[in-house]
Length: 252
Image 1 (cartoon, rainbow, N blue to C red):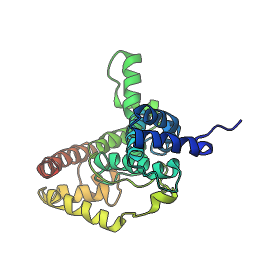
Image 2: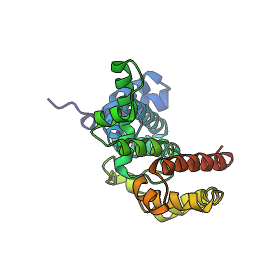
Image 3: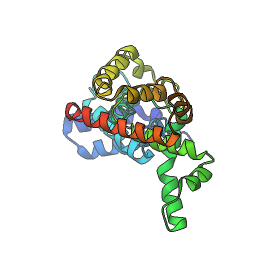
C-alpha cells in the first residue's frame, strides 16, 4: 500500500488551511512531521562534508518550517514541490557559512571529514591520542596524506557549495531557478583572499599557490623550493593562520 507524502497533497492543503486561516499550530506540527522524510532524503545528498547528517537534517527542517509558514493557499503547487527548494536553499546557506575558502582537493576533503571519528575511535581503543601513522593505517592512507588532510582542515571557512557530495550539481527543477554565476562567486573569493595573501612574504605566497592552485603535494613543493617537507607543512599552517587573522575583522 502506497502512503508517501506526494499521494496525500489534499490532506496537506487541509492542514495548511487550518494553520494559516485558523491559527492551528497542531496542524503545522503535523505538516512538519509528515515531511521530515523529504528533509532527510535531501540532507543525505550533502553528507560527507565534515558536518554530521543529523546537523544537516536540522538545518533542512528549518527550511521546511519556513516553506510551511510562507506557503500561500492559492498556490497551485504541492507543498512538497514548494518545500524542496526551500530545504535545499537552507542547507546550501549553511554550507556557505561553513564551507572551504581555499579549494582543497576533494580527496583531502573526504579524508578530513573521516578524521574526527577515526581519531575519536582510536583514542578510545588505545587509551591515548593516536599517532599519525596509526591514523593513516586506520584510514588506509599514507602519513603524508593524513598530514595534508589535517592541514586542509585549517582552511575550513566561508565559501558557497552548490554541488552534491560526489561533485554533481543537484538538479531539483525549482532549485535550478536563479542560480548564482560561478565565475562571480570565484571572483568574490579571490577578492577576499588576495589582500590577506599579499600580507605574506613572497616565498610563503608562492608555496600556497603551488599547494592550492597547482595542487602540488608538500613533498613536490619541498623539492622545488629546497626545504624539508615538514618545513613546508609548518609554513602552510602558519600562513593560513595569518590569513585567517587578517580576514577575521571583515568577516564578523
